[in-house]
Length: 226
Image 1: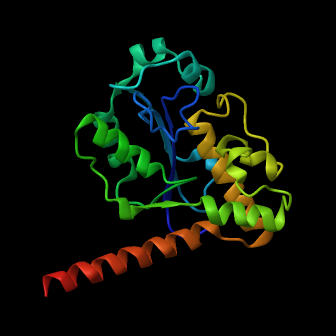
Image 2: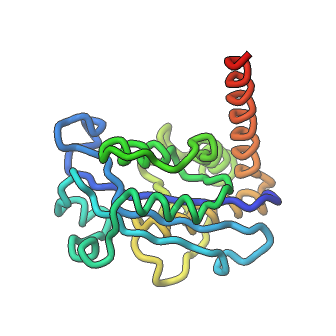
């Protein structure tokens, strides 16, 4: 794994049957975040000791359906008791990240932005500080572990099941596959296994890409001021 500390995070959002088929484009189909899980990864330390964040988030526009509960395991009672509003949750995530690069299995920052835009507030994040491990991670899994992976492997091998591809069991008590914090651990141990077994340093690849993207953005921004 890289020498630099970083954050891995995952989100779950309200959904309904048929929403994916329409790419959430139909009236009332919003990818409104209802749970966030994150861990601060410190290279060289056991992953069980990492600081974590687990937040339940109350949606404003998306109805909490039986389908959402079936997929995520999140009940309306859980939201009523422990849920907070999205703006507060995003501020807590911002403070937890504390300037570190934040990685997810996919562009979860887009779901954060969609939720903020839907609810009408400005998210506290710089999108350039976020990166996705999705494509390089599945590329390395296909190369070293599972050559039979389909063209869109994340459909059948979501974040919460990745650890099975590298033969690592997660501890009991981390919840089901769509629990964001469980997903974070699954992503982390998979990335760690790829690096330790095959010298495939996906995290460093993504961090390097983020640094180049940020540098290019700053360059063009300064040129605009000339």
